[in-house]
Length: 155
Image (tube, rainbow, N blue to C red; front, side, top):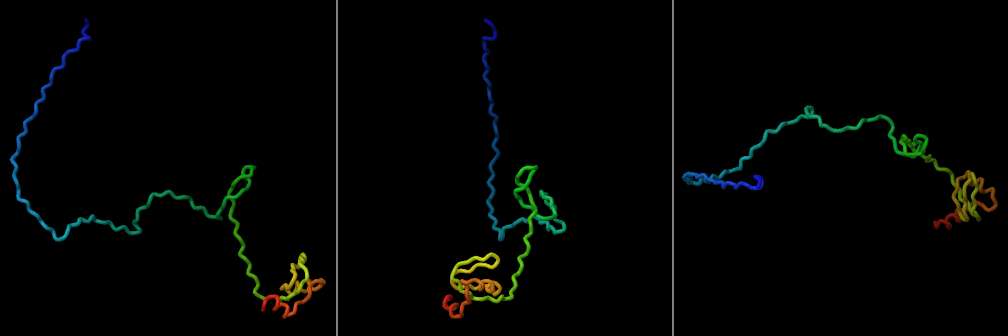
């Protein structure tokens, strides 16, 4: 038989435990101290003036001057797509003249619409004097009396 088939016996290891000498125990008297106020240690604070403030590392976006833009549908490389267009400023609404126009009460027997003049409905209608002159040329429109207006509007 060959040598590799036989395993040598492992030697038994001897472990020695060290001997520790014990130190004599000395009991000290217990002293209790009572403090009037707890002591707080304050860390020194640095006062930072606004001029000496440290810069903050922040990511900033470039600032562009000009008109703001919004997304809108428009031509993009010859095709229709979403693009940015400048915002159109709306013109300020014009103030209506406070001057009171003269109005006239008309009685109509029909509902009629006249291009360039306006509309009248069956019954009492309040219209501008310029329009009233044109409506009075029609056979179904007459001037209304103050009594008819009061009766119509419950006055």
